[in-house]
Length: 222
Length: 212
Ligand SMILES: [Zn+2]
Image 1 (tube, rainbow over the protein chains, first blue to last red):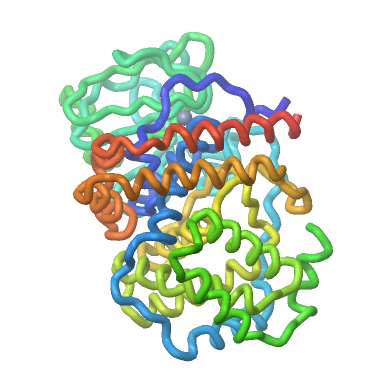
Image 2: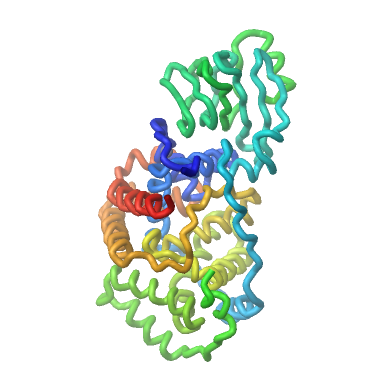
């Protein structure tokens, strides 16, 4: 069976985040998180479709202020249509991967080609290119190891792609999203059985406790 | 892809504006319920797909194009850009008519998502990460029961939105059409998203079954 199907996800995205994705108001890194999670999670896919339905109803029925199309608008659109169908690339053949396709699109390759950079205590990261309002990165935590102890200034979401981790909020396996608001101090600890790979997005830099991580933070863009 | 989708442009028809106008009047009148209107939009998209029907397109255009334009202006586009993008959104509707699946979304929802994606492309200049698609074969006609069920849930949601206290409805409108923060809105309004969600979830599960 396809690796993308039927996984038992217990920790989901919030309605607020899904609604923001639907409205198109989230920073790019958060959109990447939503697209990645929804690729694995039917519950959130359905909730997202429900949010899109709200957008559709508003567009269809509710008052939009004083807008009129230009007089030649319809003719111009028909002319645009008659120029032909825009070429859309055929969807790539899906092969089962640890990385759902929205993530593979960002990395431009698959897991084995990621350029990891060590950030201390065996933990490695790869920063993904997104707009500046928020950051996205992949994290690799060795089996049984801990992430550096850190708190948050903003909102951070961490989703497991491989392996599992445990923190104060519970046990997180593939597809699960750990949502940490500001002020929560937490120390995720990777499950002993497998290296843990996560997608982490944040709208503020993490602040690490302890002087060494804090110095490192200034030049590794964690 | 089905043969018909390759042929849409080759089978041009003269635009019958008379028909389009008559139909528009009917749509605008109070006698037409939202449900009938949604049915009409679906058949319009199918006629665009099957017959390259410009009258059906004109009807959808008259209703949706100004709304899409308003949505884009509210999101920060100037009038010129919003006009251009609204035209592109409507042209996309024409080109992708063969991909529309009324068991997954209403026509309005479908147009909303096209407009939303366009907004992110042009206004925010960001890439738009999309979830992995669950490849519905475009040739497969969706089950009519699913189409009806989705319409009923949409109607329930629509009534719930209308019944909201004005302040709450404005919050939602701002979240979608004002490019404002969506913070707390889902919590504050308590919309019955659960009903339509279970319907859509059911559809997904059925799809998973057929894909196995
Ligand atoms: Zn979920």
